[in-house]
Length: 244
Ligand code: UDP
Image (cartoon, rainbow, N blue to C red; front, side, top):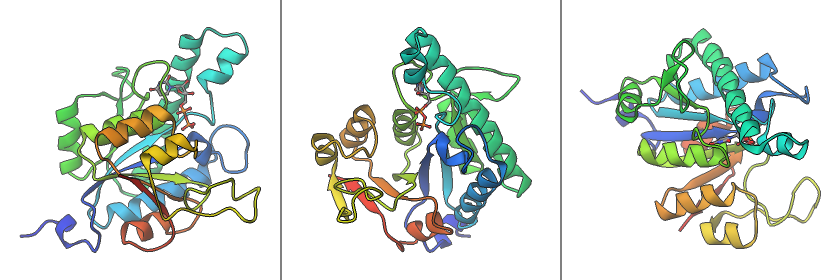
């Protein structure tokens, strides 16, 4: 009998979805906006229903960013740990929203906190994916001075994801900010090196270099578009593919 993934009208079997913490705050300006978390959970479910195995990394910027803390005089590594803890809160919120709509999940933290979620054990996480559980990787890489974009790239490589889908507020990578410049042009495809050289802001340079060195494509798309994630997986809609 063929697996649901094999029957799915999508070319991906296992993917990483990276969303920023800010994607969960709606118009609130801070923290979590439950209807927005539920909307994104429904987007994830719609792809999960296709049989695609899903890894998820959520940032923490809606609650705390290490750089912001250190700019206010806090010791940088402490501030970064606070940022990592913020990602755990977001992961738990997403877990709750997904499980309410019948999607089994595991929150897997790079910093062990056994009463709250599972510690990261690579082979165990792979097994969860094989059992069609959505794996929400929390606490970033577990190290200060990194970002959740780098965590997403690291976990995507470890989990052998075929691509990272970076859900943003715009439908791809532009040569300049499309919200400020009417003549901004969207790239269909762009190379990792171009992203780095032109500072295109897809992800931070550590994340891009890690994706480049492991030939992991990054697909930048709009998470604000209803049905967007599922559409992109089926090869529809607009997006930018970062590769080569
Ligand atoms: N962070 C960290 N190490 C990591 C991942 C994240 O120290 O491996 C901290 C860092 O302070 C960062 C914060 O967690 O500012 C929140 O993550 P990020 O800024 O990537 O969130 P996003 O911008 O995606 O919401």
